[in-house]
View (spheres, helix red, strand yellow):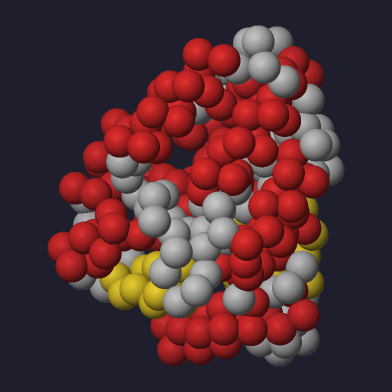
Length: 261
């Protein structure tokens, strides 16, 4: 089972589950925990191979991860904790996992908060992924990760986010990075489904105004899907919860409080 951390509220019965992105860990939410635990029960997860979730014996003999298998990891934890339903907050690739969970188990998802959401890969993103696939066996994974982090978060004010994710990525092994990177072959078909299917689950997209790779697709989805809304934080890049934590916390806590259980 994944490593996880909980903060139990004395009065609230509402759960909020945080899902980090590839190369990160539950530590990326350190600017959220203090405020969110004042209002809700909080669950933080380390995805497999990240943070304190070490690869299992089964993983050691399985070189291929899938979005479904990683989503099932999350479901296993919330089942273990007997959480009937939860709000889910994700960042970057974590938003894909949350959306996949909502697709397969909609009754478990009260709402989705999608920070730096990945809902479509544009031409630049697809070229980056193909370059990564081409060179992943000959270039140290950390070099690739630093390169991708700089492309996604290029500005000076994105430096803290880049540094945080690179620091967390250093805890991965080359083989673990390769397993996660192979997930890129699943992304485009999955995102096509997500864009086509409206779950009608309340969804808040929180995007940085400088998140040039991913913001355009989210704007289009919000126009087409019901129960979706978009908050754009100006002068902010991909990792909105790290770059603008006070704005992120205030907006998201208000949204979750209004959305209810």
